[in-house]
Image (tube, rainbow, N blue to C red; front, side, top):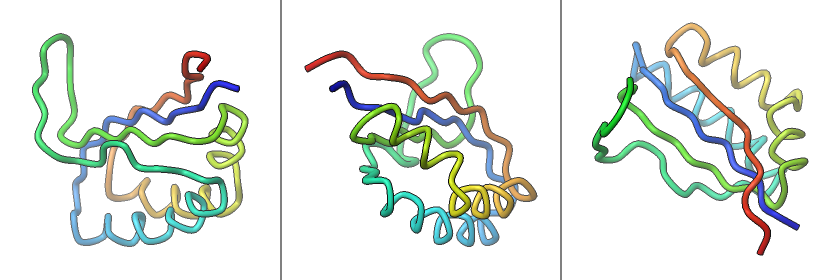
Amino acid sequence: MPKGYWIAHVDVRDAEAYKDYVAASKLAFDKYGARMLARGGDYEITEGNGRTRNVVIEFPSLKAAQDCYHSPEYQAARAKRAHVADADMVLVEGVPD
C-alpha cells in the first residue's frame, strides 16, 4: 500500500505562539503514525512562490494522512495555528512500493 504525505508550506507570524501548535499537533501525529521527513530547515525556491517554512510528513497510507488531518486532535491544533501562521497544505498518495 502506498504511503500518504502531508506537504505544507507555512509562513509563521508568531514563532512563540506557533510552539503551542507544534505541541498540540504531536498528539494527532503520534496517534496516526506520522513521521517527519522535513520540518523547517534550509531551502531554495527554484520555481513559483514559496513560504518560509516547508514541512513533509509521511503516514502509513493516504487514509491515515486524511484521518489525522480530520481528527479532533489535529483540528484542535489547527485552531491554534490559524491565528499565528498562514499555510498551504496538500495530502497526497505516494507511489506504490
